Amino acid sequence: MQNTICPKCGNPKKPWFELCFDCNELERQKPMCEVCGKSIPEGHYLCTEHWKEKQEGKKKIEQIDYVKDKKIIEFKEKFEGKYYSPFGKVKSKSELLIAYFLHQNGIKVIYEMSMQIGNQNLRPDFVIDDDKGNTIILEHFGSEKSKEEWKIPIYLKFCKENAGCFFIRTNEEDIYNLKDTLGMKFNKETPLKKAIWK
Image (cartoon, rainbow, N blue to C red; front, side, top):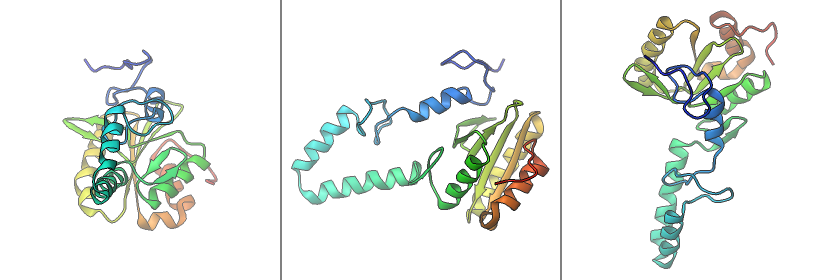
């Protein structure tokens, strides 16, 4: 039997998500250590262990500390993103534009929400949960053709097998006019329909 109750709040959730939509959003807002991901007090960016490590590192040669900080920044930019959107940090300017488009149109979104699809743990760029209980997976494929080849069939199969699940994708050409391109995809391929997209 698949688990459809959120372990944090007890509200219903979809079986392929670890938490319900609201609890996942709350988890993303908690301050976490930039190195290990442990929960930390508000206003801090490192846990006690890594803060001490950083303080000890300051006593060492300045070059070593610079290399370590550079690695932390590179790690954060690669896995966390570097552009601030209404839904948190995103990894690319194209995703930032999509995030603002979704926000402007009042669409509730979670960025890179973990999904268990079969034996794969995937993180689609945007997961939309509408008021009617539908799940819409929006994946942006920039110039990464290799990701397109293996991800698209997984999402299409998943949506075919699960009623109320929809998959749409964007590419770099779509970014130039999201009102027409992404708005049209929402109107044609999902239950999210609007006469005019902002």
